[in-house]
Structure formats: structure tokens, C-alpha cells
Image (cartoon, rainbow, N blue to C red):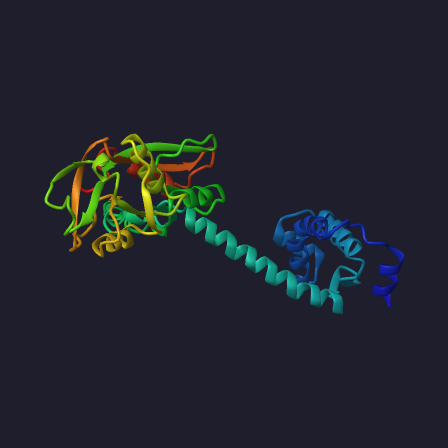
Length: 317
């Protein structure tokens, strides 16, 4: 009856659930301590807060909830049925907060922390494994959460806080990001083995003006570079197939479905010939990017420093 009377007598002070959580949260640990000891003085001593502060916090908590959580017996207290129900949920919430605190502390640990690192699909077979192997020579227990994606998608994940760093191309120029050029990678014109240009070692891109191209989809950095290089060579590529991964495009070239501008493969693929492009200069810049103003944890700072030290030698020779 007391619970119902208090609820009827006092309207809820909260405008919405968020306001309620913000008001209750600071007092939950106090409540759990009093519930555990069933003694305000003892709980205050264990939590190292003044008894008057603890008593006022419990009264305010009951007022905010509109129910009695404790039955008082002199200096001792016992939980009401409502108090026992509330304690079950409070202990669960506090345990989850403690697990979250442990996790973020572990991720930030200099020796064993975590780096969320994004990179282009074409960096995954050889470049990124080599980088991580070299970095872990001095940081053997640092953990990595690895994400492969195209450039724009990784930049969005940087902005969302899902990545700490990413290797991407082209090197982004955006006010909310910091980007540093690390290296450049030559692009080759990839043609079928029986193609009219296959006997050549070098080619001007303009010589492929009448060819059908297979490319990555719009939005991919390599697609933008392909379009720009073809425009510089004086033509707009006729695109027959669009894909999401460079090695798939190589397979399409090998099947005779077109030609492509691609970075070198990790492993040579049969059925294609890779030609050096002499004009225009066919390269793509590779850079590392991160969100401007975001503090680095020690493992992220260490890996960033390592990447920046690899300027000019990021990619395999």
C-alpha cells in the first residue's frame, strides 16, 4: 500500500526515460552498498562517503522512484520487495558497467591494447600482413581489429568511431580528417593473354581508348583514378562490368571480357598480361588517415608512428 500511496501522492519528476537514467545513475552504487550491508553507517564507511550524504542519496532515490526501497529499523535497514527487485537489476547494470570499464582499459593498454585498422582490399594479401608482422616484432601482444573495405566506406567508419586508422587511396582531403601520404603504387593496364597488345611491355593508355574496360564500382577510389587517367589520356572508358574486388576484375580480364587498370597482384595470375603505362603517369597514392582531434590510445599512437616511419617503403618492392 505504501508504494501505491507514494506513487499517487507524488507525480513522476522525470520528463522522459533519459532524464530518469541521468538522475538515478549516480546513486545506484550507493544503493547497492547499503543493500549489501543493510547498515547505512557501515556502508558509508566502506564506500568512504559521509553518512549524511549516503542517507540523503537513499531518500532522494526513493523519492525519485516513488517507492520505498528500504524498511528502516534504527541504524539498520532491510530491503522491501520493491528494493529486492530493484537490487537485482542494479547489480546487473553495475556488473555490465564494470565489464565495459575493464574492456576499454584493456583496449587502451600500451602492451596488450587494440587497434581498429582499416585498409583497401588490394592491401590485404601482402602489404597489411607484412606491416603487422613488422610492428609486432616490438609490440608482440597488441591486438588488431581488421576491416577491409573501399576508401569512402572506411572514412565513414573513421568518422563513426569504428576505426582508429585506415590505409586508403586516394589520400583524403577533408577538414575533419588528418591524412598523410605514405607511398605510391604503379597501376598497370591488364589485358587478356591473347590480346592485340599482349606482346608489348609498355603502352600509352590512349592506345586502349577503343577497348572495353572492367572496373570497380563508382565510389571506389581506384574507379575514380581510372576515370581520371582515361580522361587525361583523352577518352572516356566504355565500362562493361563493374565489381568490388580487384582480383575479380583480373579474372574477368583473363576471360576476355575487357581490360583493366589495376595495381600489381600479390601472385601472378595466368591468362593475363600486365603492361606498364608510359603516359599518363599511372599511379595511385596510398595514405593513412585518422579523425582529427581524437585522442590516441597508446597502442594506436604506437602503430600510427610505425606507419608514418614507413613513408616511401610501405609497399613491397
